[in-house]
Length: 234
Image (tube, rainbow, N blue to C red):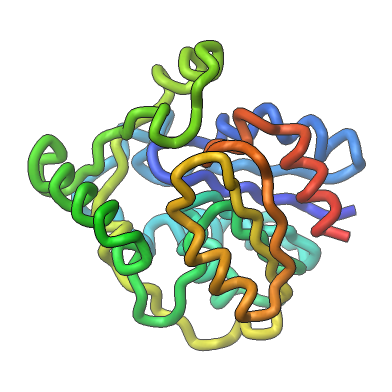
């Protein structure tokens, strides 16, 4: 039995995994889905000081409490940066990393560096304008491949602005997690912002799976995603 720790991306909270978690639990696994500082029900903790290290510490502390050495650590989108740093700090606790349409950064790289240039520019402009210089406003869900009205209605009231600093803070890695197995899941039915990251995963020799859905796979294709996670967990 593994312990799945599911880490959400920008604007979300741990609730976004609610459709996936039951499938993992039904297969006999523990599931934990923390909400990162400053997001969703923890939005009251949001400030310009919340950065990548804040979110890494959120997950590191959870792993310390779990005291498990068989964690499947899943990071969606922005959280690829988070799980990379967490594994570097607690490599003995992580059995496998799974990057779900996510950044697969290296030492010294910030999430902004890994975005396609047009997307990075748009995000920077949004942060500088309506984001008051330090927030990334929520993007339109249609851009992320969410088209069913029921999904839009479920997501929209729960999403909150995301701290821009988490996208400009670089990863600081020691190389301690070099031996931790990793895999990548790319969502291919949208604008495929993470295509280059999937290519990077292939170059590293990681297993790469494709899901025929938009970026929000945990909402739009929860059973298919759970099946892939279970397969990768082995």
